[in-house]
Length: 244
Image (cartoon, rainbow, N blue to C red; front, side, top):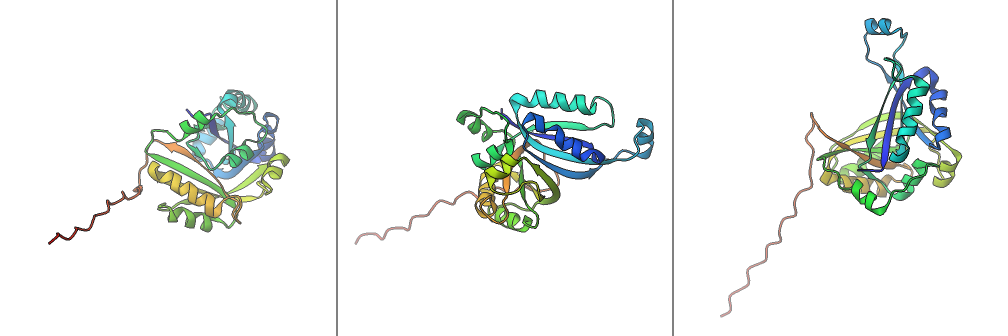
């Protein structure tokens, strides 16, 4: 089981500064925030005493060893046990685009990811994965061009706002606290590594896109057909001329 989790929280949008500030005492350096809209009907909103459904989705990486501490803090701070206050979930990482990216996104959080555990991240059993590439605004075309060159069929682009501590910005030499684009790509497991490698090579941190990339396992996919690498065809040997 992966030792790094993608923590997703959906909280009221009108408390954005409080939302992101919550993570700082836990050493979380980087949070990606995406505006979103709740789908509750007006009748339900009135029943719950809510006046609006504008939400903010926050995504950050945390070690599994600290997940219980962080999630308890979120539940206590925002009273997530009460309907309508927010939700959270944690998803184990399936793969990571390089150790440099992992260290940058984890910031000051201690983690003990051994080589064996890194290999375990690459051995998930799900047939599909969701590849998440986070790049500078306006770089989604470059990311998708790289992904398609490795077999990706398409992707979904989401605009987000990044917040990052000084350590992360200094470590990477780039700003994660600017406008970002999240490129979400569903792919087969066989295509995961080639796609992630292509994005890292053509649109990674050293490129103008400054993209970071990771993947999470997906249990079920409907509505699209996942492409898989073509099996290599055996090379046919030319028949040798018979000797006279």
